[in-house]
Length: 104
Image 1 (cartoon, helix red, strand yellow):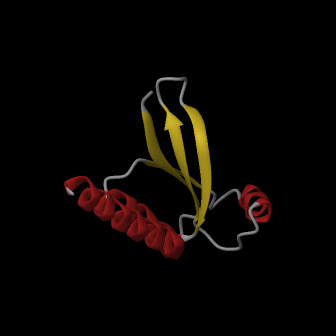
Image 2 (image 1 turned 90 degrees about the horizontal axis):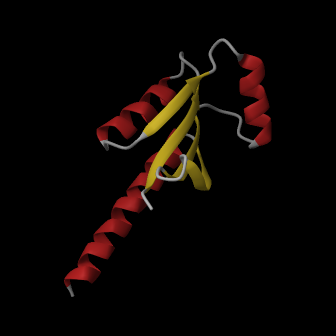
């Protein structure tokens, strides 16, 4: 099974935090896709209400099995840019702990 993480973002073109989130994912060479809802405010409000999140970007992390028709195995709501930044910092710390444990 070829499972990889990817990030899904709902953005608005005029949003500096959306641009920062995309830049952060690019800098970390992480897989992501985004939908710009600048001109579809109704859809943006629907997503916002569904996840009880009032700002953009709206971000999820997904684990996808690419060998099995790109089946989503797990989807985790992250939040916005600040939450994404904290999430990635925590993942970096967990990877460092795992590397140290493997060296023992």
